[in-house]
Image 1 (cartoon, rainbow, N blue to C red):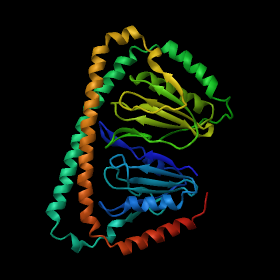
Image 2 (spheres, one colour):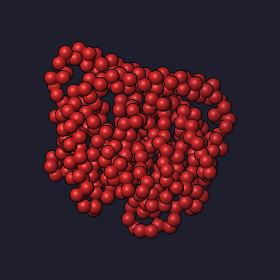
Image 3 (tube, helix red, strand yellow):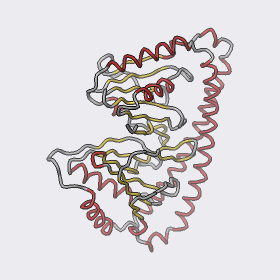
Image 4 (cartoon, rainbow, N blue to C red):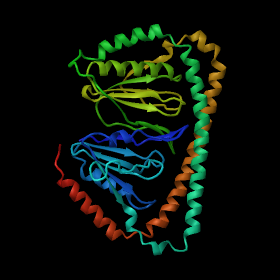
Length: 356
């Protein structure tokens, strides 16, 4: 069975941004919130759970700061969530023992093995934070430049032409309303800024896809917002993935699972491969003469954005290397026999839970 993949959240001009709390608040779901410092096995435990339940409907959420690490796993058929509740995505039990509970993996430290390492550990934490602050500065500047592109392009958009196209496209992709019930929008993250620059996770599903090519953001955002409203009005639920790299979040991708249909957006900093997809090239929906008058400014914004993104990715990679060094101190202090025993018993318990 295909596993759905997302990011838990990602870097934004406002700092780390995530809407995963909405998943935790969902009625009927029970959440296990993992606490404990670096190297306590939170991601390892979640990887074991995802592997154990790979034949069931599972969603995994990757860490945007370390794409080899998991931040959450959701067992959809059991309505169970296991999530890393530590910084920068701190989650607490809103309704303890009713809807959430805390699992503290820090209990498996042997504190005596941390003696004499206080200064080195503090230095690693502080240095790691310094580089994350640097990433945020670069992202703030990146965001300002691309928000400028969005604003310039919005004033050049041929909305009459685009509205006409949206109506034709909607007739093609949206079946007649199946119910009087309004569909819902759910926000999940398919793209985020990582150590490998801006990245969109690849899906192994066989959904029909439309690829939107838009270097100016405004038109694709307008189209996806319009289409998502049309789908929900027709009774279909829509998963929306926003780009958080501008001052205001914009619609970047939408997925309509019931129809096995996806719309994905690529641009100059998020170049996606579009094999065998229906391509929507957005240049035709902008007034070229108006865009041409802004060409020099837009060109500068793009070039500077790409340089800032490279600097941010390098700083994030440095922060990750420091984090890896930090983990070593804690890994050496972990009682793995007790931790592994707890993990095995926890997974056994999850297996006893009924499907719902």
